[in-house]
Image (cartoon, rainbow, N blue to C red; front, side):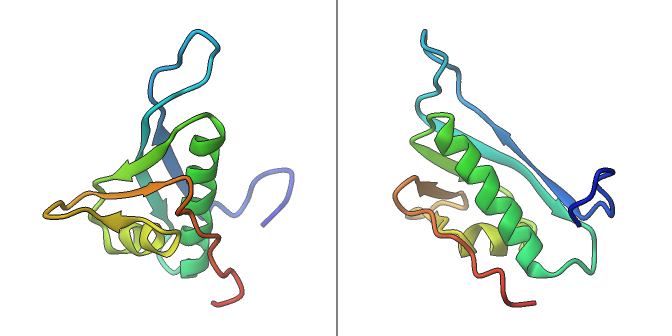
Length: 107
């Protein structure tokens, strides 16, 4: 809900940015460290959180974003915005060119 109090709380995402260079821009990979939503929240919310977390990381200069989250809701949301599993890896990653905007019309 979009209101002044930020209620009701539905979830959060945390992205760890790589170190910045002298100009203040990040380079290299960022990591999604947390992506959690309140039980019963539509899957579109988790996908929107994932998309905006990745978008913020890319706008801050990250060339790619990775995650080792194994929660089914988080993994589903990450995959929906373009994260893919590398060969023989349990980690998911996406480059800025592969990021997809999730379809937020579904429930």
